[in-house]
Structure formats: C-alpha cells, structure tokens
Image (spheres, rainbow, N blue to C red):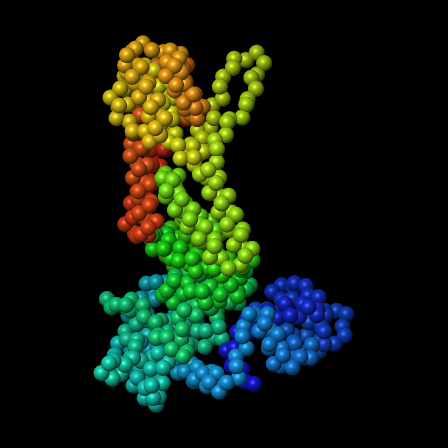
Length: 611
C-alpha cells in the first residue's frame, strides 16, 4: 500500500518521538533535547538523544537514526503498515485507503507544488528588479529589512494581465489555473490572478509553497487577495508561517495567532518567531487543531476595537466544541488602534510581551463578553445572558470540560448577581474610649454595592435625609425630581419629603418615629445599614454647612448617574446584539462618563475623612 508524503508528515507531526520512545527508554531533559541509554545497543552512559522539534532520534554510540515510524519498525519489530496504523490511532487519523484516486491526488498536489515553488522564485526576482521599487519602498516604510523579506520569500507580481502566464509559456494554462496562479473569465480569457501586488508565499507544514497572498500597493480592492482554493490550496486548513513558527513554538512552549501577514513579519523582526496568522478569515476548526498540535494553549491576539472583539468572540465560539482536557486558548487584546507590528516598532518586543502577559483564559473572555453591563441590566437581560452562557458551555463536546464550564459559569453568575449582602464585621470598642461606628472602605463598598445592582449614591442621599431631615427643605426642588427605580425606596423618599414639608423643624429621631408609625421604619433601617459611603451629610457630627454643600453635590451626581445607568444599560444591550463599532464607542463613552462621576464621588468621600 502506498501512502502519500503529506499523510506521513501529518502522522509524524501529531505524535512526538519522545512519547513513543519514552515507553521503552527512560528519558531525561538535556537542553532542547531528551537523552537516555540507547535501546539498540547495550550502554551504561547515555548517548541516545531524542529531538521532538526535528522529529528524530539519534545515538552517538552506535549511529542509529530514525523517526517515530522507524522506531516502531526497527526497535519494536512492527511491519511498516502496522506501525502506521498504531500511530494513526494515537493521532486520531484515518489511514487513507489504498485507492488509485488517492495516489493520483497526491501526485497532482506534488506537481502543482512544483509550479507554485517556481512562481514564488519568479515573484522574488521581480521584487529585486526595477519593477519592484514601489514594493521595496512599502517594505522599507514598514521597517522590513531585505534579509527579513528574503527569509519570508516576499516577492512582487508585475502589473500586467499576462506577465506570469508569459513566463510560464511551457506550462499548460489548465495547470496554472489549477495551481491558483491565473484566472479565467466567463469569455475564456486567461489573466494573471495577482497583478501589481506585494506577494507573500504561503507554505504548508512541510515547507512547500502551496499558494500566495497578495497585498495591493495602490487604491485597489480587495486590499488582500489569496490564491483560489483548489487541489493544493485550502485557506481554511492553513496557517501562515506555520512551518517556520512550529520549531520556535515547541521550544518556547507558546504559539501566537495574530491577524495578518505583516503582523507575523513585524513580530519576527522584533525577535518573536512563534507567530502565525489565518489567511484573512476567522480561525477555523482546522486551524485551531493545527495550533493545538504545537501547544496546549495558543495565544490569540486581537485588536482592541469592536472588530477585534467580534473576531475574538467568533474564535471562542469555534473553539468551545473542540475543547479537551488541557487544550484551550488564551485571549490577548491590543491597545485600540494598534496592531502587533505598530506596537513592536514603537516599544520593541517588551511592549508586545506586556500585552501577552495580560492575556486572559478563554473562560474569562467568554464570561466578560456575556456579563458586560449586567450589573445595570434588567432581570430579563440577565436571564438572556445566563441562557447564552449555558448554551456556550453546552456546546463543549468533552463531558468533563463541559461540566466544569457549566459549574464555573453558575458560580460566577450567582456570586455576581444572586448573592446576599453581608453585614460589616463587628469591631470591639477600645477600653475607656468613646464608641465610634466603623467607617468602611469606600472603594470596596462601591464595588460590592454595584455588583448587587444598587446605586450607592442614591443610598447615601436617602441616608443623609434620615440623619439630617433639614436637608429635605433646602434641596426640595432637586429631590422632587429624583427618580428611584426601587418602589420601596421611592415610597420612603415620598414620605420623608411629605413629613419634612409639614414639620420643617423635624429632627432625625422624630422622623424615625414617624416612619415607624407609617410602616416604613424597617425600610429606613435597611437603607442606613446598606450605606457604606461616609459622606459628611451621613454623619451627625459633621458641620452643618459642609454637610449641606456635600449633599447638594451628591444629589446632583446621583441624578446624573441615574440617567447614565439607564443609558449605559441600553447601550450595552445594543452592543451585545449588534457588535458594531458605533455601539461599542457609545457604550465606552458612557462608561467613561460613569467612571468620571464615580471618581468625583470617591474624591469627595476621601476629602472629608479627615474633617
């Protein structure tokens, strides 16, 4: 039975040599390799080395040398086909049937690869010639030196309809068409597929040129153009630079997936060689599988704008069904408006490494994207998000990983939105000292209150009225326009305003007694207990003029914050549905406004701590 070289290469790539040899030989790490006593001859000092990056073993004592297949045939005595079948079962591959069609397909692919290899050399020659001046200038502007361009085999396609076809005048047009080098119109006219473009050769894992990506240098659409899918080229099953990045990825234990060709080249220029890119599309299942063969947790690096978020979300959705124990992803987000190449040219490799160090696990990315804005949302929107989280976990095929995702999503949702408030820890009074109520940390309190969906400013304003009823009279107009979503809090505010209007000299104790008589005493106590912001107006000992000024500021902020909460919840809901750039920017602008208000509030709290 004849097997194609592509299948055998796939088999060798999927099954590390050390994993098979290690069943017969005790191996220990020796730099980039592993060593042990040779299983082919008797020795006491290890001279047998295994190199997974290069896919072979070698003994410096007896000279034996081979790959993972040969180890099974030479050391374990298996027939070749038995060795292949055993390794294929471990790798999850199906051994191709010994059919004439399979052999013909392999032969055609090899012949087409010869054409694309030849085309790649012709493109390189054009880049070095007079016609390639504009392309060389573009590379110079992007900071790509000539030696790096040669390493990646960059070239230039002449701006003529039949320049390449004329060069290949010894090859049938149908062959060039099959190789994706030329096109054919409905009228039967033959033309070069790539014209006036900077050319990026795309290689398979074996290092064969199987296709090209071409970048337009002028105002031409599309900006990037790939070879047409065919017997040799399948863009959904290839990763740009995989053949060069593979050894570096194994050595460093990480693989970085970026968006484009120039990102990969820019990172290589900064000394980061373990980067690959999909071919102008979102990551496919086949591409994710390619990445997982090299490392357990590839790093997906996306732009920090709405388009980048959409790409990360699509990649997460593709990855979920394929997750296995130990196999996942990490998501890194670039600063808005910058790509890896920009970042490296501005700040060197260290700037990009900082982005990678901030990468989050896949589960954290999914949780963040689905729970964004839920602290401000209605119960119906929270329920919708919880349904999406359950559906995401349910899509995972592996039962163990699926159940753990489900449990973790449930735990996070309950902790964020269903947990009950906890009372502050009791603090003993110092002997002989005057008892003072503890002042909780405002920043921590703010986070806790927001996570439960309560607006801390409104709670503080209500507490101020209960402690200092006179504030209701001096701020009556502003209080009358304050909108409270909680019906119990709204009833409490209405009753306070009514009571203080009828008795302008009403003090805190009298107001508390009145609220108890009308059935709102317990509600008033809950508000005061829930307040963890130590404003001057919530403390009876603060100066009256300071308390009045601070209350006015807090009341204005609370009114503005209520409007922002509603707007932010709506903007977040729109963005989750559309994932559009405009809705993303609207949401971020409202978040920034909210952060500014909260920062001003916290500054006010802190400024009065020493008063």
